[in-house]
Image (cartoon, rainbow, N blue to C red; front, side):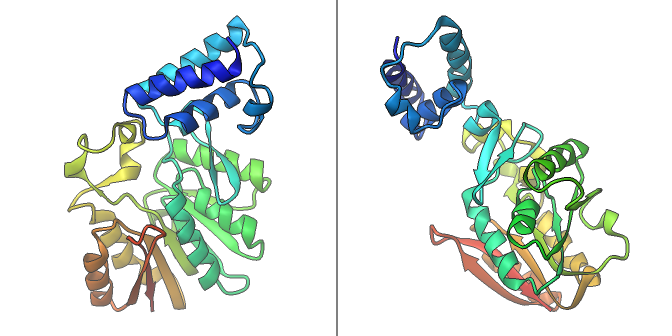
Length: 276
């Protein structure tokens, strides 16, 4: 079977189980297995696949048929123009989170000290440092496995020791450090929704997705404790759920912040800016 025929067949199989973008997913997986860029599949469309290639592709297509996210299947995800290593130990970076990076770049003064809480794959911290080399960037996560991936991504994209990675829950490892900007994409999905959302979410680390108290527990912790870690005129930037605008505004103001909420490109509330 040639590449073109296999793409068509794989697309139909993925479509049959309700995959949202079956053609795209089939092409990405097949290109990855053949060490090609996706656009090269057209150039090589008539090339006949070897039995070894078909076996490898088939294993990965079967994983997608079970709703495993493509990023885990191919082991990487593009974010902010950079390719990040991802495993099931880290949340897959989302396009909407790029808005959080944009805001952190905008609000960070020259040579600012910035910390990324719940760093996961390190996508936010690394994108910040890659774009703004003047920044002094720290990143923390409660998961040692996630930090291992973040450090690998940092080494691959920036080089060793460009970011200070710290192990611990939220502010715990920061001790008495002060920052100009605190940024975080915390877990904010309501725990009661676990198992009712798209199947792909079942493959991602629970600790990085779900929070108690209608998904607000970790957001509340960060807002409540951030003042003591912010310099004068410091900024706290949070990614929030589309239904958490009112809570974030109310709680942030209660804790002494000026709060504004920015919508994402779909028109949904996404980034909260809290200023002292």
